[in-house]
Image (tube, rainbow, N blue to C red; front, side, top):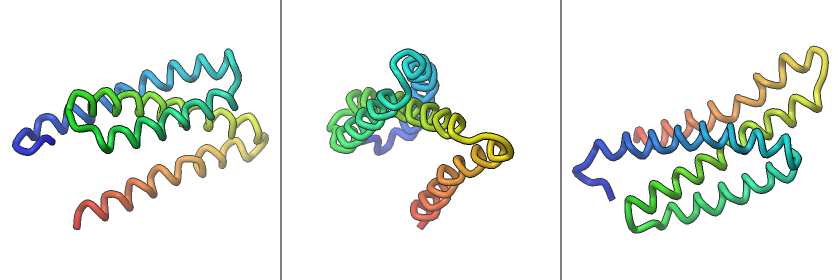
Length: 118
């Protein structure tokens, strides 16, 4: 889709990061208003649908829109699930749980980087 146009890779990454930023804000407010569980389920469904559709998008423009929407939902999933974890634990666990919560993100990135570097 972007053969010979390496600068478009940076555009897709920028689109993803902007989507996460907006998703954190939008879904954070939404979770406070309608509830964390409903918001988390909605963001997971939206993330799954946009992720699958973006895999088969034939045009770069559609891919960017779907990738942005997927990132918005990803931001919502991250912020809502993190707050839900923090609300459940107390005491000394409030220090440990945020660290443990972030481990899968780093682990998946490491595995992905290893696979792509082959």
